[in-house]
Image (cartoon, rainbow, N blue to C red; front, side, top):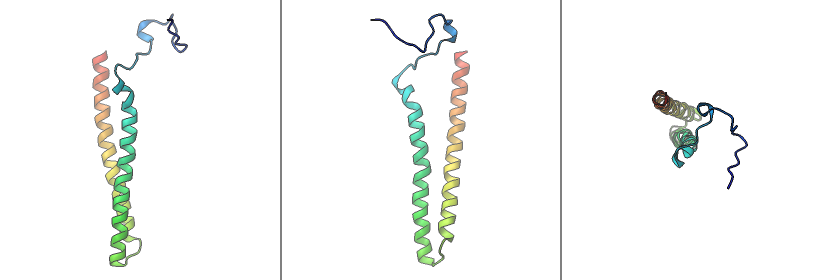
Length: 100
């Protein structure tokens, strides 16, 4: 059976050809990162917003605790995303160095 890959040029040198994903988990890594990113943003926002709204009802201070909790969720999510991106950057940088 002939292998049809219109995106690959058969005359292309081997070092220029795109490398296939080595395992199935390599293909799922971007989807996992995007799913994690969505949860990291949504979960603190929902939990802290509901807590802020609850505190506003108790202390009758309409949007004060809600706004504080939304800003806190923003900073928590930003910090987590920043630390994850630094780890991924270091991982991919080391992986690139090993391939050379």
